[in-house]
Image: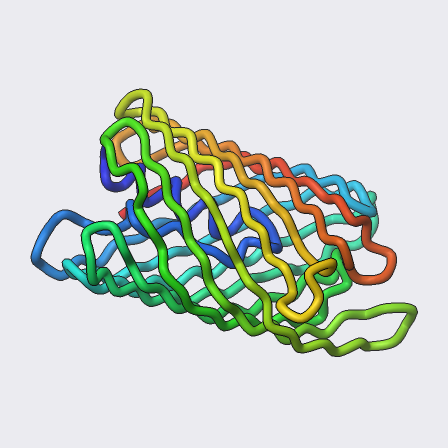
Amino acid sequence: MPKKLSLLIIVTLICTTVSAQIVNVESLRKVTDTVKWSGFVSLDVSLIKNKNDIFKIVNRTHVQYSTERHLVLLINDLNLQQLASQKFVNRGIQHLRYNYKFHPRITWEAFVQTQYDPVSNISFRGLAGTGPRFKILPSEKHRFYLGTLLMYEYEKTEEFDERVTQSDFRGSMYASVNFYPSNQVSIISTTYYQPRIDAFNDYRISNETSLVFTIFKDLGFKSTFSLLFDSFPAAGIPETQYEWTNGLAYSF
């Protein structure tokens, strides 16, 4: 499978939903002993349904630096949204991740992330986490990954015209199934389960499924559907939200 197409698919999983704190980075690694810089920029158009009907335009930038065992990646996701024909609002995510591969099938990862999302009443959410990632099935046509992390979450939300602050530890377990039917087409589906450590009835479950195919050598089209269930969302926000994103990405 082309390396740049792998890069496009995996980073799509990082950015398409507000709950995605786990980054699938195994396919980002280059099979080489030399240092590599790479990345992509993309422009997406989305139709979202939660408590509002939302039209969204998203610009994403990804840059990574990798060696045989080490990988550092930076994601910047900025978007402009229009809520039910009303005013436009901004939403953003910044994500920094480090991976160390100490075994052909085991990688240790650590990350920090910040985000703001007025549509979901999130004034600020900060995350920091670490844990192992396992490559269970490493074949060329099918891949299967499991990960389990512990993360700290600090969040400020707007509820009933008041600012509510919370800080918790959460588990973050995920399974990712990757299909590569051809060199031009890829399908990846990842499911997350994120319970609060001291209250397992407070949890999030989300699934992200992406279809990506190449148009030209460095240009791809991607379509991603994301579904989120949050047992304790911010006041006024539904427990279940979904998002369908389509767009183009140029890799370098």
